[in-house]
Image (cartoon, rainbow, N blue to C red):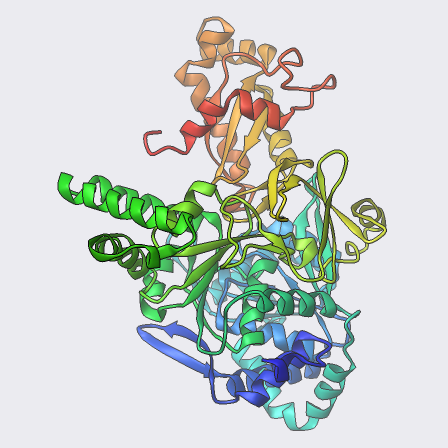
Length: 613
């Protein structure tokens, strides 16, 4: 690995070294129908060079921004490399973003070219065409897609009079292949001109006020985080990772980059819904996921356990207990012997590994805190889930648990070169080579986030005697869901309380699989609504009335229609009384104290996520 890493200034240079050292080794795998398609490092290299030549032929200049709106797929990896080779800047956008948010990011970044996956993404740009003055061309990958209603959507039906604005991905690739001989030298010149301090990508993350901020990451940031993460993991060219996380997440792009560093094969999953099916196809040795994946697997095992006959259930519990006790003592399976070892292997270890394809050695969890119980569950079943900690502003990772030093419930210890300290108010402060230099064209926000090179994370935490970081809360009000999505709750609250019927809206979802809300009713608005609806009762009685519930349900549905799927409120309850300053639930200016209010209503919020709800 040293011959690939040493002396490289950018991740692009490191990739080129990898392709030169192992040109015919398998770099990626993906499914096309029922077939598995393999791509070598040489193939990946050639396709990205051709795409880069295509970008140059289309007029993309060094420093131009090129946006990508697509799910995780092998073409995304080709494009990412090609954008850098053209000297341009990648702007990833989640395909789940609503049209207005996409338009803001494209406007704010000044993207000249956008690559979309399919007609569903193309429609967003057509709807916002008048705002996208800087966008000169849109490249599409798939001409047909399934819409939200399950109906097929064709590109021709979406683009209409804007057909000349669009170009097929295959046409871009063909354009590059025709021009690669003439433009190859220019592509090589731009590639070699890149320096660690040059801008590589802009990742958008929601601010507390709801307006997305562009996190500026340099080539040096990306190289530093990739090299350091790879240096602490037991990986080599024989490994296979399953990549399913959206590549609009820095954590996902990091996991792809780590495979480049070590020479491992990356298998592209089809979606988060097919992870376990994809595991059976690709049989990964490691994967990166968000807590929801590991909790889902744990819940599935719990369901299987409950359905076992009594003696089998007892044996499974005994085996898991034996395995967990052995691992907790540091000896793992080696400390078990005879019958106990065979039963633990047969009933605890092997079945869980088979769910992941049979070869999984370890997994990495990021994006949101993983519960200690879930980490201990996997350890008891013979799989270490290494929780990490990082932010978009740190290119995805600054802390990571290690195979030989894994403490479930913590974000692990700092990566090499990272400094961490806890401020007087409990805020986590970070400094290191992967920490960003600021937000895109937001000097004040940049100044607020950085203090003499130290990043103010907005997270509250503590560090134990061995250096493991434990997250205890959030200083700023941005929700991080179980899927790792960052969501600003304030715009949702404001949208709900803009209706006369709703007085307060507490949005909940930190570490959860979806958003929920606690609603209080405006007394005047409630009286008006009750009179118009012909219903009577006290505030408490009306708060429980089905007609009122249905009205609030309609309001939430309207709000959900204007946000992305990950921002939608799935469940809610109407409280029998308002949140008050007397109870510490709101400030003197009536701003909701989310942490206090959530804790007071913990049982109700927890019920939203139970199987019985």
